Length: 132
Length: 298
Image (cartoon, rainbow over all chains, first blue to last red; front, top):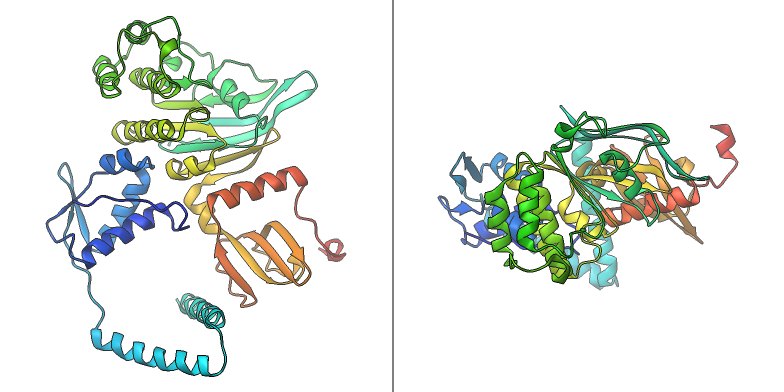
């Protein structure tokens, strides 16, 4: 069993915070297949949030194949997170490091780099949506 | 689907002043609705009209399909907690429960006594000597024990300290989770509403500034920051809620269901508080002024 917490100042919607916390718990092995998530009523009673928010988070997790609701019993972890290929991760980290080094050599500040990254990240997402 | 609260052209005038004017709303059942607005916006008036404590000057209102004052059966279907959670200060906690059982046909004795025990309320204590938080919890217990389909709460947590406020909302949400009750609560504490509400009604100066599902409202509003420009150059599906300009920069809050693709804008999500404040300012100051004569062309 895990306990949820909320960061009100993060700007991340509440249901997404719950989803992310389950993801994190799965990633570090705190939750494993067979484990039960707290009931909506338990979450609501501890966080004082809308029950629909909890149900929405659980539906999201269910759609992602990570949990399954068993009527009358609760919501159980059934899936594991598919980990990204570590080799791919290493490859992109290397090219990102090289890019960052050349950006700094060109005189860009940390803020410049962050602004470029954010804009490019958003543009690539917008492209993806445009195609879909 | 039944509608929890419906208002059509509802208005209430005190002397020359309209406390509520041309208010039209249709709030679905099964939601936790936040009724927000500055002081004097008409929140209390709207709730009083809905439960039949006052009669409208214009228009109609109904709760769960019933018109106010249509009899005891209609009264049994909703619970109303007036501002500052009034209790009878000379009556003991136990006597409040006895009275509740006597006055309400569907009274849930088991819930009422279990709840007062959980809250560690002394049955022999007079309500007048309870703390603000305890009194609010007692009033909520009474309202829930009558087994309503809909609970209306007027500023239930405004006068409570932060801990009592959190505990009150925990109780309320637990009740919503276990009994599938619809709730309408008025407040000007947006942080509290953000946690508990999934539907929002913003009331300003007696009229509805915006109403809708919280998630869809948040998903469709964005803050745009970019080089100074005229809001009129935006695509027609983006409506500007708020605009401010300095020297070289324009900041907008826009409402749109389509993605914002213009690379000239830095787009960030808005919080519920940003959204509520923008609509409040807009209702107070009038719609966004269009900065050029282009307005005439449209």
